[in-house]
Amino acid sequence: MELQDGGKVPYDLLAMATGTSAIVPNMPGVDLPGVFSLRNLEDAVHIKTWLREKNARRVVIIGGGFIGLEMSEALHSAGIATTIIHKDALPANRWDAALSAVMLEELQLSGVEFVAKAEAQAIEKGANAQLRVTTDKGAWEGDLVLLSIGVRPDARLAKSLGLNIGKTGAIAVNFSQQTSLENVYAAGDCCESFHKVSRRWVNIPLGDIANKQGRVAGRNIGGKPLTFDGIVGAQSFRLFNLECAATGLSEKEAVESGYSPVSNMTWGNAMAPPMGMSKIGMKLIADKSSGKLLGAQAVGVAGVVGRINTLSVALWAGLDLDQIGYLDLAYAPPFSAAWDIIHNAAQSLRRSI
Image (cartoon, rainbow, N blue to C red; front, side, top):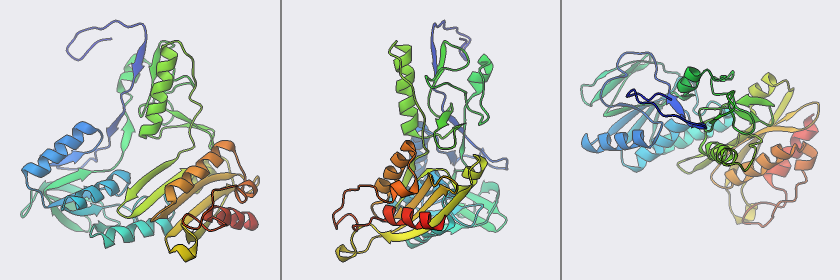
């Protein structure tokens, strides 16, 4: 292998973990000082240093996905006013609109400005702050601009080796994390994973997936064979007082995978009503012909991540709505009603098929 400085390093086995690269929009000003992407710890350190040195009072975030939403909370906690500029009407596009609307309400209640259906056009020096972001709906100034458009797998080195690249743009691997070259392995955000629900190879850049793939690659390199059998797409994040989580496929992804999806939205409580009110919204998606669960999304103040984890296990096991509707779940009034929202949602959707 040839290094950037011209040096060469011989190898018998190579493990690649090149991660992702941030998507940078093609517009003027993205290279100005104070414009950042957040991809790794080094980026976070640079952002924190800039905020401190500039005594930042306001930040503009371009993009209303996971990173942008999580950063808005972190900045708010640090006493920094935040504006999110997003191309769509609601944040977190992958969630159902009813659930994304709950997230938007939480943002607004927490004092985060959300500029919807706005396209950023340029970044330039500001008049009353370090920078100004110009959009088709006006201009917003801030002492730092965070680009939160998304990430893509960094497969540049893999391409230089002639490795097979999957349809996702990530490195193609087998269940042992081997690439198309037997002595080269890949793990983490730079490579694909097998999705057990869609039955397709996908690229979902999440830390828990990367950790598992890294361990599997290490085991195989070390002579103790192990396979990474796939994922169901479980993910979660916190937004101020909300838990937001999802697993499996969205309706669009289900159609693309050859299913005929049906879905419902159920509103319930995280505990038995006499113990208090803690609203949860849950969407289930199932295959109309088989009744098998395909995906789930939920948002609420409490109890959301645990329930989505339960439904992730149901996806892993290939359970259908009838089975999920009568799952044996731990019941106590502080944690759920005798019929949990999972039961109610599954039974309701089953009746509609």
